Length: 116
Length: 117
Image 1 (tube, rainbow over the protein chains, first blue to last red):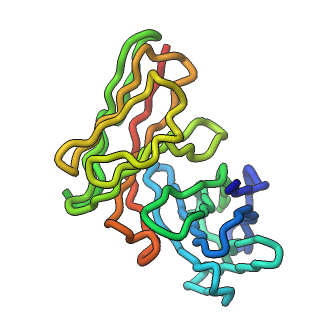
Image 2 (image 1 turned 60 degrees about the horizontal axis):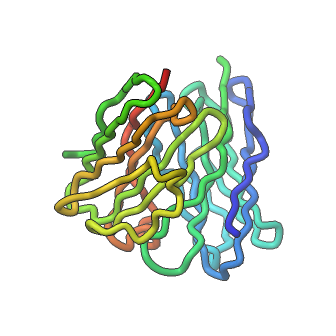
């Protein structure tokens, strides 16, 4: 079975703090893809990153960084020097199969509140 | 259009009534997905279309739910005899064929918020 667990339901930080959002996944597939999406108050999910299961290299994009560890089935997301505009619900997702446009399996999301 | 368009943005209905939710995907996107977002439940997959056919209907919660897609474009999600537990935000997303593994990106609409009284 495919499953994505985001254990943190809500996180609140003060502006400029660093924050890490956890994501743990389960899949029997040897090839899969992992994603992070951001849902701001407007409601529209915005794609942040996709990671291939073969590529465990960490990635950094500005204040965002992702730590993929296959050994622990985790794909954690860190925001450094958080800003109020980072306040949103963040979803981790898994694409479990190897062909076609299979639907993403999403976690329940983590609501991040950044306080000024 | 430039993005995925959903209508209505808000719908309030009485228990037992039927509702139709519409999704207009990005032009040229052959794959279309419906998800449901309930409070505290994350995104629940409902159905996926490739062109006009639905290879994966596994997420539809009951036979009161149905969806169709015509002309490889607009899709309608119909909920018959609505129940209070159907209250949620219904999100539509689209992508190019096979593109999840190339670009990884699903393009989402802003959703249709359904409230069943």
